[in-house]
Image 1 (cartoon, one colour):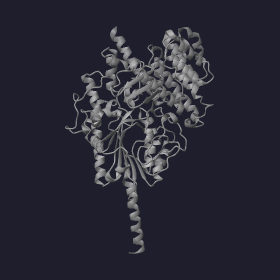
Image 2 (cartoon, helix red, strand yellow):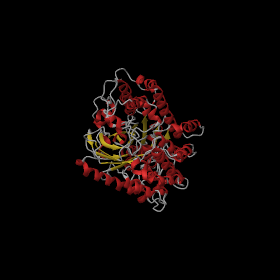
Image 3 (spheres, helix red, strand yellow):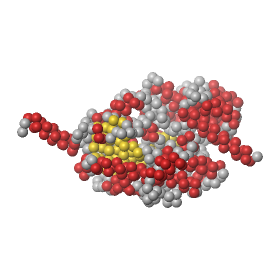
Image 4 (cartoon, one colour):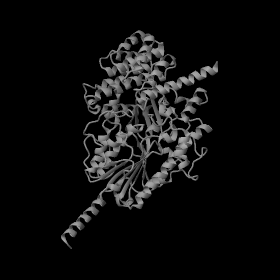
Length: 631
């Protein structure tokens, strides 16, 4: 044999060994889907044979959680392995910088010889996203796949299917859904309006069933698309060298689920499938195993880097799930939910898998808060109409009302989260344990989102929020969290403590004093009116806006009305959005109609500000119509 032929043969052998040692990795991600709408998770009404087969042949996880409840925040954690509450990326479609040392984790796979491709969604919720994408992927586009890799080069490929997205399940007009989902299914595949059970927090009517059938048909179409991809993998003789991950980016794209800091917002389906060649890597045993261990999106990056033989950077604190370096299982995981589009919020959640405890730091915001992408949906319009006409039961009404500061659900016995156990003496010990664990975890990570988004933007002009939050002088987190932790607690004594916070020198402590007072009943603050009026002149805008909301809500104070009007028109998106959001839940909106009309028409208004103003105007149209018909 000639020397050149020997060299080629040697390289072929090396490549063959290399391919055997390095598995291909395929990620199949779907959008906006909770596990209870998939067959293998126990839903007999669902039609998901492809996903079910993958679970039967692989490992199915019952306690997998997104670290956010809307796509861009959850995806920032998926791609970096760093939770949003460390980076300040929890607010949907924000644009703040992260440290240069935090990479998209496929960057480390490329260093191990992998070809990385992403088809197609990015939505990573960070500044300079295009540069970040270029560094992360060999190819990221709507045609990206493993096909452009070198021969025998292992690949890490992501395929994201949008067929189950909220646009399909609720937000877009029904005619759009018919064209993009219903008409894409065979007659055999279509799921009729009567062929499923309705969640109990929805009124069971023909109109609601017509809308809710969209969920089942969208997931059916998604399952079909996954089947097509897996067939392609098999036809190209790649399946037996490929480990497959299947998961959703967060909870179901329906009212009360996505965007909410409860189990329905966080819990996702997750299946991992191992080919025979790499079954030894699985710590869960044989095919068809169901694992109850706790997993979050923070765990994905270190797991994949470890599987491919890479060095895990120090900043990645998630678990390694697979292989010889597998991490110890966790007893609890911390989850978070922040602003979604124009709907501001801050909820922190701890779960052990069975119990889910959530702390609502803005409890004056209901679960059905005004978010334009939700409000535009027919299903939401039906729900709001039934609520206004008193056609809902107590549970169904509750999602339109201010939330309690704390909720505790037993998911094992109450999958739809209908019974808050916080006041139940039988669960007192569970409540105390979960509450203490949440406080411990939040203190440990020094949660960046206890800064209002206005502050995050200020900080981001000079340094990253990730680094700023670690500075105990600049960000005195212990004091800030003590102030925030009063929010939602009721009574005059709590109100007095919150009033004292308005005199603190730290801007964020004053802000949380004001937010807490906004949750108080009028009877708890009536004697403090004159002291609150001083807060209208606070030099820190989030304080002045929030105090104005309190004074207008309870006393219809004229100066408060002026302050709110001014900030609704502010050029700073965060301040304008805060002011309009407070007004959305105010009973007497009429004095602000002309102001909000002007904001909505302004050509330079930010999308979220326009969306919030549109919600305001939609509400007023309904109120004006009802007033006219009464007279």
